[in-house]
Length: 287
Image (tube, rainbow, N blue to C red):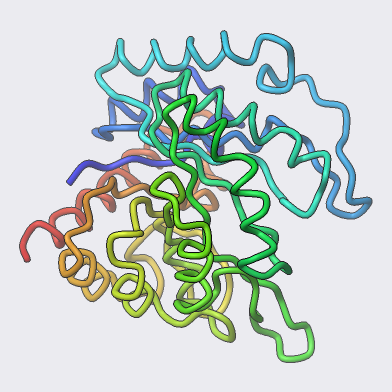
């Protein structure tokens, strides 16, 4: 089982280029091209802001090619990517094709594109069906992901697109195309209130499940912490993934873990992440 992790959290401290070098040195097999900085979003005003990141400029493909080459020079590949969000923002949706292009240029096979939290499977299908011909031209699969909303009164997560096994399966099956697959966010699945449990969702998704976002939480909040640091039962998850003969990468999205690391010790944090991913991969391999 090969391991990967998102690059955004480290890149905001040391840049994408150095991050990919560090991932390879730490023992990762691949890198997840997280493209959140393609769009700078003001969550309060619900609008895009001016942005000088290379992914937001005219030479975005050259930037993606450079990252791919750095990975290859260091012996690792891009396995998947993550388009910017929230999908409910029209301006951000206009960047989804750019995200697919960058995924292909970097060598990734899957681009995770969030569904609109508050739309049905049929409504979200319209967006995916519009994007799929472009994705196929570039040899990139699109993965939808299980989401959540927050209920302030109950102080817990509430239903959003793909939050339950049934709705997740419906999102995939209503499109009925091999180029739309599932990326299961294990942490979202384990949140109190909306998630129906990662093990249940893995078994329900079966062959549809081709990508993962792996992180830990207190089974209440979306903590995005390093695996084995909080309350999720990764042993049961590893067994469930083996049950369905999962063929994808083990990709971490424990982006909050590196927030308290400095530029001087971020490599130590990356090594910790690699060790946690290897531990989970070893669990999977023993079954």
